[in-house]
Length: 354
Image (cartoon, rainbow, N blue to C red; front, side):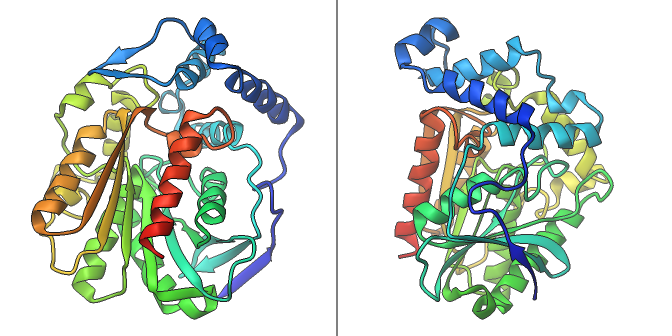
């Protein structure tokens, strides 16, 4: 196992003065009293019997006023930089005991160790989202810090090759290899072999579901799967996809680009490794914590997958954050509602792995 130097316990990387100023302005707006935020955000947004959180509504409005381009409208290399920048603006400072860069089965990875952690603790192998074409260690650094510190567990963030340069099944293969590596190196990571979990958001939730299935088939330890607004279908025609496909961060255009970038052929869309909702579920599948967002195009397929797991006999806990949008897992340093949801997830994971 190759281990890098100890990183700054508060920030993932050096931050430019401009980004610090932008982040400070955004944080100030997101910290205003709710009544002031409502005046700035406008009338409540109500869809499908749900009301969007006012701080989230304000954040989306400020993004529009700043004419911030949607990442899917940019060439993919620029979109990757833009997504990392957006994540950094919402990250805040998330102190933690230790952060170390390392190599997991040949791929960059990062280990987060909470303050005062014992020599051995539960481990969450975290697989980042980003439509299989964006994201990495930088985009989800703050989230992993908060999850690790709040839950009192180690978090190993892993990476995978991105599309379109590396289409399906590259991401699946890399994520599965990284999980197997984590199990094999549990002692080196300070992980309790009986309390190793896998989890991720969006595309990372998709890959985490696949890892949990494969672990059960292979007889590999997997105590818990944590699926945050997971993409579970290759072809989707759900009510939430139709209702929330524009105006709530994740768009129909983004999903179409992600699908066309990752899928090498139409047949891939029906491959269970691409669409875990189509997989034959094995016995011994890990307990699942599934989280969805009310204003998310992926909401319905995530909840349908939770229902399918439950029908199979898997222990499942499904939580919908009615007032949130896709991407709330990255909004941990500004506002109140998204961070509150992430803290709830961390607390649930801590209890499940206790």
